[in-house]
Length: 487
Ligand code: ADP
Ligand code: GLC
Image 1 (tube, rainbow, N blue to C red):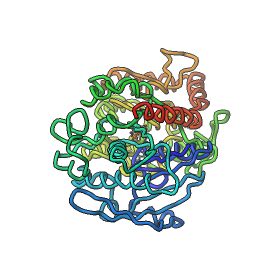
Image 2: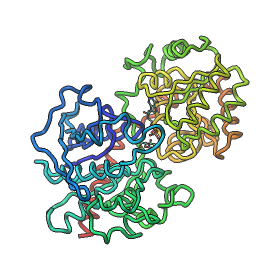
Image 3: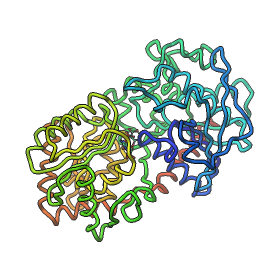
Image 4: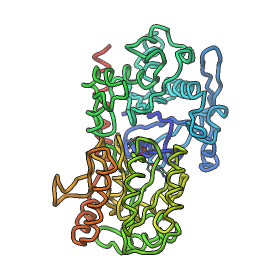
């Protein structure tokens, strides 16, 4: 099959979270399975310097954006598995210090930036020498693509237009802009109605994708159910319910060529499920790197992630206040909402021998925390899939999670299956329940045979991408069938 993936982030070229990991690994795996794969993404600042082999393509693009025409270039790179990467250059839109935000606020022209990007995706799908069967969009930044494609086909200027799939990685981010932004789409005004792009008087890019994609997926079976409910639906649940039969929950995979403990240059010592000595060495090294007392015997709790409300930071901070009375250490690497960054830095200054905080983005340290910690905290209020808990399992680091979305689908608690347990789950979103879950973890830590059983169960769990990518191929086939039936 010929598949064009479109995403605002792709690992290893750009990344702020799991979206980049997911699309990068999906593209690579589909190419390894023999499919023809293209990936379209913005050319952010620094990519050309880090990947000097990237080449400009000979054609330029000109995109109509409201009353203006915007120029762009396309850069090309062949990925390691043969996937073709197309980077859309427009220095005004993409040469910025961040992808989406500045000092905690969205860039005011995110509407123009990502409508431009979505139109560039469609331009490529139409003009590349190879014609994709499927255009697979990811999140709100490419949510308008299915509508642009459909509109173009309807106007009769695109025969055999590709079928479209939209993956929802996070319903909380929808790309909602003032009604006046709709003019930037140059679409007929009759799509700006409540059954389509209009959303409480504004325009909603993700909603457009939900309405117009031939098939929808999200990143875990539990989240697929959750987003049909009012509680998790972020006001789009009525639209999602209409398309419930076209929505598939496909659990993300893990790229074990990157996330492994045996061949990983970011780690101090290799280790595996048969021999965990290296894990103790990594723990000591991490304690040293972060300036904590080197005490391999005490439990070390870790966390890496975006500091956003979604991630359960509020209950995490409250639970730590109680749990830090015990002889433990806690380390966190993250960035995000300024008030959460400050709160963790304050915690570190109050508990300098127990808490280490690193604000920022650091891939190597993310691996070292996964490897050096004994437990990994993910108390998310909601979690579409979550990759860190799956990375933790492979690293022998026991996840402590709230039972929601992909966390619920990947972690087995002893109350579900004592012999297969690989983590600790709590249900209510409360500091009290999280504290109890950590206390349970500390009991397990002091019971070596039980600790070893949890670790082993986690390390042998297999979430490899081949299985996930095959599910996507099935979804692409379904999308083609449903597009044909709709014709
Ligand atoms: P989300 O996509 O919601 O942020 P995931 O668990 O799916 O959550 O994926 C997070 C990914 O981003 C992981 O690969 C994690 O290691 C990485 N990550 C998040 N924050 C940081 C950071 N500050 N430094 C390095 N890596 C980070
Ligand atoms: C989103 C979600 C996260 C998921 C990731 C990759 O960022 O918050 O749960 O793992 O996308 O699909």
